Length: 276
Image (cartoon, rainbow, N blue to C red; front, top):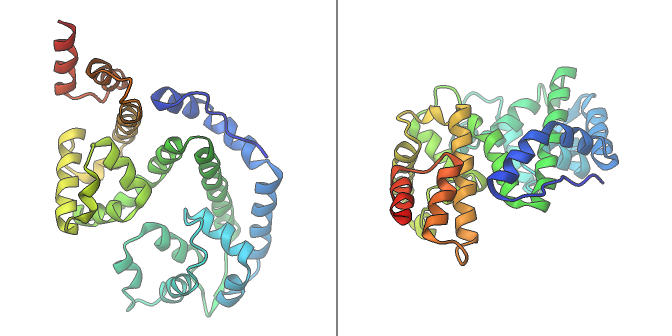
């Protein structure tokens, strides 16, 4: 089984992963286990299938849910069935109340017609590509979980922002998604007790940090490539500082932020004052 190569940690490791991502993903996707799972999914979903048949095929359900970033949630049988059964019901508010783009995408892609899941070849091809990328993220996490979180953030934030989504909706999606939330909490150095606060208060604090630290006024700007990269760099820089706190001086901490291109004016002032 191909193992991702990540020889460095922090921002340097992220830059290496980005520069080699395409080659590594191709090698990983061509490994026997991934190829076999992908081909099994393509074969099974190329024919009309009932929800019962999908739920009964644990391998197919695992692979399909992995493709939508829902790996490990295939045990939620009743939850999955409800999403698939109600996605085509215009009166159902289940997915809207859930406010989870991963489950919405999953249910909409497999949306049964007259009780049957029917997929076109182009839809299947897209799911196959997603399965490879999501599986690669998991493999990266086995080597370096911070890189997995960064890859996940990079791929998920644009989905969370969505089209014409309100700021409140975006904030609730972020707060409800553990990996994306982890990236932001680390990047903004938010306290561990944040989750114990009222949800509206959590959203208020998060929005303030997003707008002040990233310098954006519209949360839809989170999906801009330069803003996404700034967030990831800050996340990795802050995590490096946190994990290396015993050996980091205030000067090296400020320098880490500055060299990543995500340092605030306060970090710059701190660094300069320590040099004088």
